[in-house]
Image 1 (cartoon, rainbow, N blue to C red):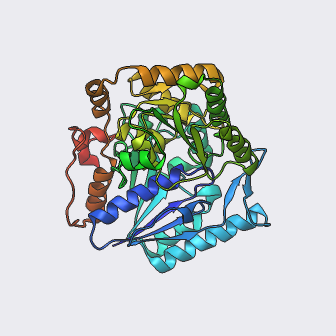
Image 2: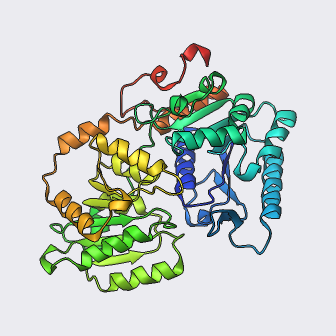
Image 3: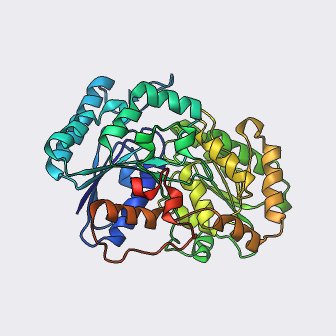
Length: 422
C-alpha cells in the first residue's frame, strides 16, 4: 500500500509534526506500507525518518513583512515558484501512484498548487482515495466560512474528497456546525479525537541529569513551537526570571524554534546568559522528552504542544497566538475552561503576571487524580482511529489494529452524520 502526504507548511512546524506523527503510527500498524511526504517545511530535514517513510522537499514559501505569500529562500518570483511546486507535486503523484493521498488543511493546496494533481487523479488514477486532514480549529468561524466560500473549498471537498478527518472532538469545537459545512461535506467528516503522544524513548531522569537538574529542583520547559512569533513570550519569561530573587530561581530549558530570526535568537541568548539557571537551544527533535521531564511547561497554544501537554498530564501555562489567526486562542480558552491548564491572553502578558502564575503552579499541590480525570475526558485516540478509518477506506487488513484505549466513546459519536450515510 502506498500513501502520499501533502503538507504545505509555509509557517511554523505544527502541520508537518502532526502529519509525521500520523505517518509513523500508520507505519507501525500496517506491514506493507510506504509513505512519501511532500512538503515545503523548511525544517523537514531536521526530523528523524523511520523505514518506510521518505520525503520530497518543495521550495519554501512564507509570509513577508506585509503578510503576503512570498518565496522564502530562492531569488525567484512567487508565481513561478508556485508553478514549480505544482509541477513537482503532479510529477510525484503521477509516478508514485498512491493508493491514498492525505492533504493537510488546504483542499486545493497552498495558492491552489494541488489543482492539477486533483485533476490528474480524477482522470488517470480514480481508484486513489483522497482524505482532507483538518486540525481541531482553523480560525474564527466567520473568517473560515468566508475563506471557504471565496476559495470554493466546500465544492472541492464535496466533489473531490472521500473523507474529512478532523483531529479533534466536537465537544471542544464542532467544525460541521461552526464552519457551516453543507450536508455534502458534513457527511464525509469523521472526528478522530486528539493525537496522543507516545512516551519518548528517553526517561525524565535521563533528561534532568543531562540538564543538571537535581531531583528536588523545579524544572520549567519554555517552548514557542516553530518560533516565528515566539519572541515576546520567551523575552517576557526571561525578564521575569531576571526579576526574581536568588532563592526563587528555577531551572529553565528554553527552546526558541528554528524559525525565530537570528537577531531575536541572539538577543534572547544574551539575556539567558545573565540567568545562571536557564539554558537556550534553537531546536531539538527530542522536545517530547524535555516536556515529559518538566514540572511545568510555558508555551504557546499550538496543536502539537497542547496535545503533548495533555498526553503527559503536565502542568502548563499557555500564552496563545491571536494573530494572524485566532485558532490558538480559541483552543486554549476552551480547554482552560475545562481545567486542563492555565491560559494568559498575550495582551495581558507581563513578566510579573507570568512569574506569579509560574510559581503559583509550581507550589500548588499536584492533584494527580483530578488532573487525570480531566484529561481522560478528552478523547486522545486520533492515531488508532485514523488507522481504523484508513483500513476501512482501503479495505486493507492491518497486521494488528490497536484497540481504543483512552476513552470509551463509540465511533458513531464522532461523525457529523449517522454511520449508515457514510
